[in-house]
Length: 473
Image (cartoon, rainbow, N blue to C red; front, side, top):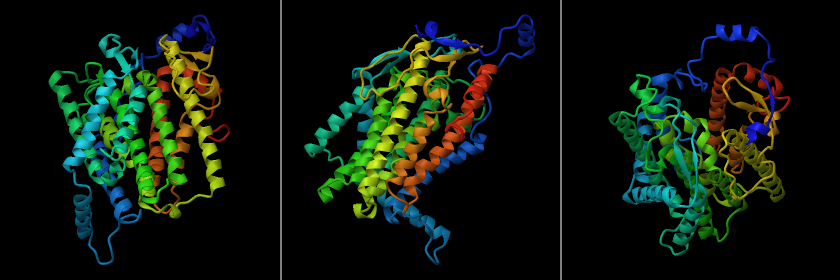
């Protein structure tokens, strides 16, 4: 309905003759969706280093946070590097061994969330047409919002009844983290080889290492359970929030109160997780769902990397007395207000983008979820028409900067580190990693949009010249 009502600006002025000649001279793009067959992340060698480095970095940071008071683990005077390496391995063995208890905790959660995916109340919608399957559209069932609050209710009951005290997550952090690492590898192998056996491979590069990292199958699923959708929200962000809650529970158990800094961080992680859950149906048409295959990159990072490396801000607060990171209360109040502003910007910008995308396809589902923020959708937005058959929105936040949803994300990552102070580098890992990731993703998005939209995208870049901050960058 919104397509007919939009105020549309054509990408180029209509002309006679010249346009037809020019179009004939241009070669047809290999990918109509702006994709590319170029190798990312340095090809096979690069992704092999990433697959090796991810778990090592996670164990190393955990050792520093747990045994070195948040400092970087380094050899002592006179200690050889080989002895130092053996010492680190011994610490992992002693404190992060994958115990039976840890396996049960992780996989009971995993299976419970998969059942909730299928049986909790939710909404259904259709994905984008898959060009390699003659325009077939896959159905998606989105129940993360109800699953999130059901999870919190179950966790609350288990904690109050002492069947499973919530602070067990922080007490058993090392072991559960190792289980998540092993599970990430295990699930990556399963999803890769089952795609080959079933003949469901797609866009294979010919390099087994690279294909294992990027994925072999686009949409592995069992019934209505789409694993890529399942991994997007429930596993990484639910676990991250529960870890932060476990820090609050442990702090209350020890001190009889929860520090304001932990309350701030728990609130920040709640807002992020809740927003991801309430907008799950908007993920359906995203580039990740439409194009990215389910390989090691998405599987491992969602099962292990996100929840157990982004949480080092919470881990630092858990391992230190509140007096070591206490903020001035007035400063913390101002910081909280600023955080809420950026949350509104983030939620409304994502809402505008996703509502426009779904309106254009005639499948916008309006849900009465909490919170409903102002300016979450633009009625009759100004757009630029493209030769690809769709439009570029030049309205709302997207008339101010081209990546308004990335700006608050940057602030969030910075805030999660800042709340802990500057005594440890590990709470800042997420901020540093996120900035590197966002630079890569922004360049990828720009190149893809230039390939897909051509002159229309140049018009958009001219109308909205700034990526993140007006008159700055």
